[in-house]
Length: 111
Image 1 (cartoon, rainbow, N blue to C red):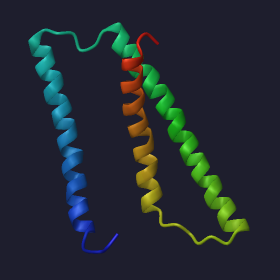
Image 2 (tube, one colour):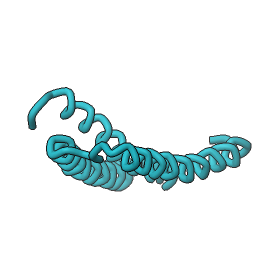
Image 3 (cartoon, rainbow, N blue to C red):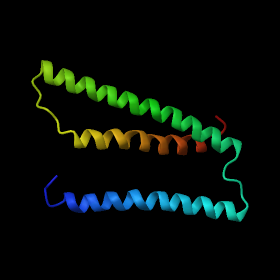
């Protein structure tokens, strides 16, 4: 990424890291005040199942990246890759897979 874009991206990331927890806490407090339960058995089970599978997807993604990097560098002479992009991918893959799996399980019906 170009040098001039990193300050803008960094401010955006910091803003998201502050905004997302604030929105989650605000939504939780709003639901508590409304009297509705925060989650029933089905949604808790679906969330647990999605988190369980997302954890393994993230771990297998990281292991695959390590093996590809090792084999490519040792046997095929690939250059070293910067650590920033793989770290971002290692954070995004489990998070996005959790969101997609939770959506899929909630649409699929009873797990």
